Length: 500
Ligand SMILES: [Zn+2]
Image (cartoon, rainbow, N blue to C red; front, side, top):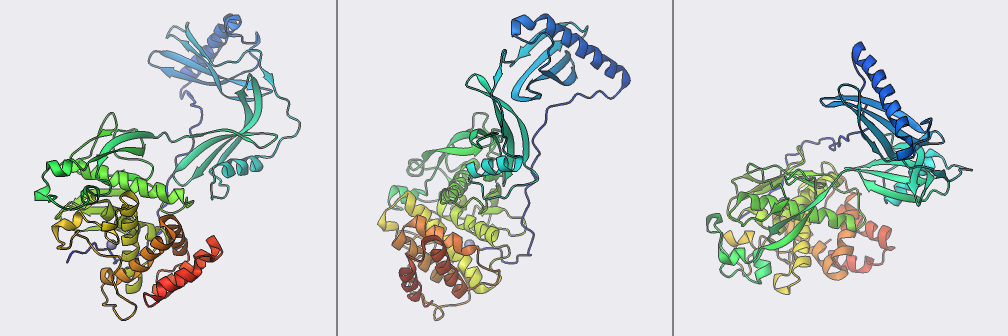
């Protein structure tokens, strides 16, 4: 019988730290040799002369007193001298002027963001840099504390025809880097911008799988990964969010690394299931969607990273999460595992749990809780996409067509009669059916969102050796913390039915 095994030979490893690139500062073209330095001074003089000659046209002050020299950059086609507009000696954020000189030192071009005749709002009492940083973090709903990586600079922004005193705050949180402008007196966040540019792409996927969307498994067979009209008919067009714009399937929450190295210069990823790129698109879309769902519940610190995924990384009919490398591998045996969103969400569930409790699953019961939680994630994701009671308590119906004789086919069920401890057999997937049943019942009773929220919250309290009873205690505590214990009586009876 098929197992989606979790690599349990985990060596406890430190949580992967994300290396963040510091915000880029204004480029400096510091020349390294004396003659170039001489040329730089000459260039600055030539540029300054050019600005004064054109002052009336651009509205510069005749003495250029509010243009602060920034840099001189020598390029193949001449020299570029850059200036920053200032207000009362502080930066007018983003407003600059460049003078391009040809190789003979003649001014070729002036490019200007300069705002002439600028009036500045007076500043009577500034809030501090720390207060500005707190305001910026609060506006982002960031759970992170102020960080040494964050930067705060006082200056002005040009808004509604005048210079408004503000702090420019750049915050780093997980993978994100955001620039916010905070009013220097009243602390209001005037505007903010994600410094990591993301683009949306489009692609075709099974959503969640062709058996669910067709309504049954009739005529749907793997046939050695070949296309068929019936399967192609089940493709759905979706938006692929958070791509980095490189043309590869790399983005905020997922980095696909595959042999086929799927690429599109227009971020358009329309393939049929016989293409190796199809599984790349499936893995990208569904993992990104599940992570966005977790964040929509209010959790910004659960596996909030770009996870590496190898969609056709093994020829086995198996898939796994590696706690040492923190990445996911999906197999091509039978139906390709990454052709079924239930299987993808199950595996991502393992990475979620390892992220919340590094080293989780050190005991057999913990391993079973991991499998059960993965099945809960997969089944409830599928249910949310296709709420058809014919598929209640099932997972991976398309993947299962290559090994299941049930109708509809299923990897496992989330409603078996198994109880703790009577029906434990020591195999994590089997025993996981006890755990998944309890969690799935919570979703039936409270809805997917509330159940997922309680369950995810409960994971934070667990230890690597936690077992079923610890898990139930943590679920009850999580309901107390999130909902004042309002689901407690139902939670108690749901788990009592499982012997817990
Ligand atoms: Zn598993």
